[in-house]
Image: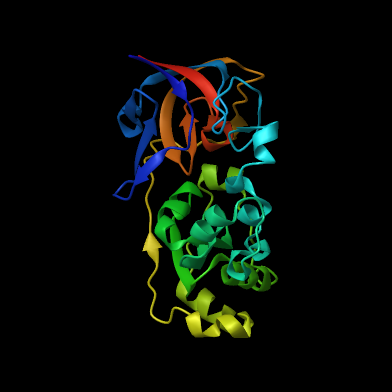
Length: 264
């Protein structure tokens, strides 16, 4: 079987284990069915997710120009505390920013390599946790806009990490934590204007990933340095494909790359 298309992050479905789908313009690939099969990945070119042109991808699937122009990659995306739509202040496109920022957001704890704090739109729960490779997660607060989520994250990351060690996550060197207790210890550090949104009775969400074999060491596949690669797929975790020879491929980090996939 052979497929060709532009990489975007894999779509997921919560199940036991998580179900993964790679979506191309004319193909829909159920990635769980490829476990234990040989997969050949060939780099074909670029296609910017905004302009659609064959221009070198700069970041997050966009060419240089679009990365600095498109509203969906404004600074407030990575730093929610910079959100200004609630004040009616435009960054790049106020209407887009109102739709994205003025909706319920969750500040959460997720445990993938360690317990970390993060922010996501409520509509992206549990997708965000799956994408991070978290095996357990819990909501801390549910707020009405992105700004309030952002200032909460800033306050809490003085007490808990806000980064994931992706190598540890992929090697499955993880420890289960009591996230309810962890959350309750953070309650006093939530900003005063957010305390009313604390989620009192939340439960942990447990997630299991389709992995047959975890890598002992981690070798990251870079398509520009290695434009052709073949390996036996042994697992999927977060947005990573894990191969038998310890090679891992981050699908999300390669958004906007045109690839050919051959399955044998």
